[in-house]
Length: 182
Image 1 (cartoon, rainbow, N blue to C red):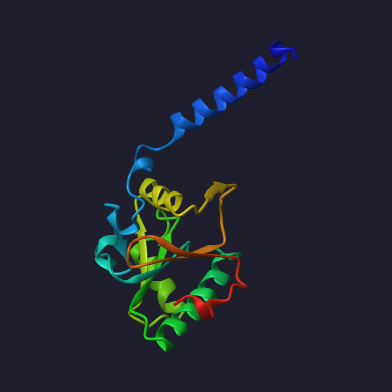
Image 2 (cartoon, one colour):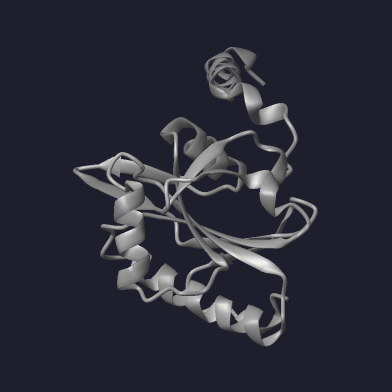
């Protein structure tokens, strides 16, 4: 076997691995406990919120934004169904809507969005935070989003984080069987 032909391939693999290692964020080796992340968010009432306040509760997490017209309306319908199940089963837990467009989703806009969607349950929390920290949190949960041509393209996932801060379920798409979540 001629090993000289393998050199370019091996060099390419080396470059890819080196590049990935260089691009891996410094927090990647940190705890994957959702509640231990030090990020501070602002809710629809402009109050400062830390994820740790929901430790020991199940938390449903969705990344979305208020001006989305494609995926986010479906996410909101799914979250409403999840809330009904949580209410029926008396689950102690919260629903977090985390904006992936914090520049435009001000607390006032989040409050209007909440009102427009007729959300009255105290389980719901509409949050915005620093974009870099939001990206890190999304990355922790394996949720992808990217801005392109004035639109934010993003995954269609909803997460259930258990009381221990670990992801218990990832709902991909909108036809998942929700009845067995809790």
